[in-house]
Image (cartoon, rainbow over all chains, first blue to last red; front, side):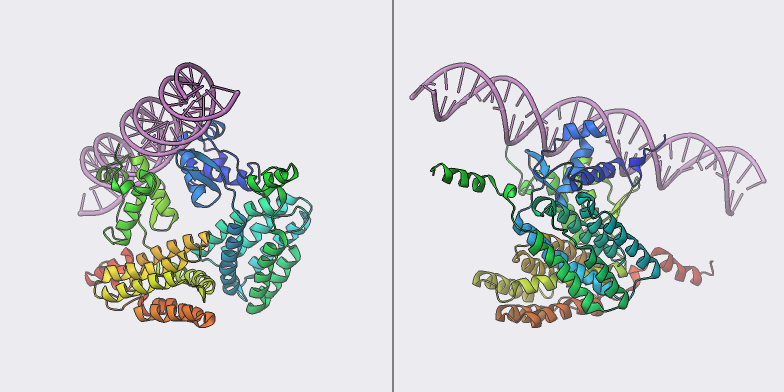
Length: 234
Length: 234
DNA sequence: GGCTCGATTATTGTATGCAATTTTGTTGGA
DNA sequence: TCCAACAAAATTGCATACAATAATCGAGCC
């Protein structure tokens, strides 16, 4: 029997996982959305078993909140989780930078340059922009050939997208493309400390620049509080 | 209906996962062992479905090798994976130390001291010794209250146990207890850089001291090569 | 009229069964 | 004796079916 294209990498279980992950990161499913196994399975043409497995896996990756017997929803990380997450990213991506500094092959440099060019082109499209910015970081991680490092950076980058979707300002370019290019230059030159500092600054910028509470992300009690005050209620 | 004790934290799926993880880390299942779903399920009194889920999850954590249609085995990390893993640990545990330095509460200090005492007591029992040493690191991570950091350190510590089981020397105290106490002292004193340096040294020691190839960890081809030579075969 | 308790419905958690794939054992030939 | 092709067994991958749990609605009671 001919394989479907979406079955490409591994079994169908993995295909379901990828599909859902993609949908979440593209914000086709926005944070807080319910994820009923039945409807998803029906829509994707697979049994609930596989959907269930995918949801469990996504919850381990922090992209889905999974409460026992109460179903799954797209994760809604708190601001503090967001900040902690970027701290962890900083620690890991510093290692990425240290590992890569002065050791990039011409092919790798070419690939990274091309990617940055793509980022510059897609600057207007906000959703694509976030995705490409994330991919730059995962590309770097990939080049370390350190499997645990790769996995964790991948995961954190994915969750970062979710967090930026929740809390990021639409008009701030969260991941300044120029910083990507600067970083690449330092890496090529082998200036490890400067590159590490740049990476740290780059990620720190995101937390201070883009990661501020915005109104519709407040929880319901806070939202109602202002209305209550306006009406002279408790 | 009364719950069984092993159901304690979460559903039975999680119980299966914990049981297998424990078995692997205790070396009751040694690296390379086959893990057939139905025998495990039979032994644990659950269906293959749950065992399958647990195995997938363990493979994501790097404790199990899972090849499509070919079954699961206890993971057998290579030496290079081991070294990379400890590099990643260093990056993350440096963040742990930085976060905790000078901020430990009296209760936390007490808990850590008690644990170190337990380590000193159990110094002779090799298996327990490894487990306790690992727990010290996970305890520290736990105290950061950074969920991603906690999860990754937990995972890496678990895999480290596996690696030490494979490549560690029986007679070297892999995780010197005295280093744990020194580290705690620096953390209490708030000497961040010294604590970080100590942690780095501590983990680096493991890679250089304990993480050298030993004979029975060679792959089957290398092992057979010597026998082949002895018998005058290809 | 509002509230509590109970039945109904929806949704998840798990077991079982069938199909597909791989591995092992066997038979025939060179 | 060795190798190749084939058949049998074992094992995984997945779907379906059933059981358990939580959410929803409605009736009776205060």
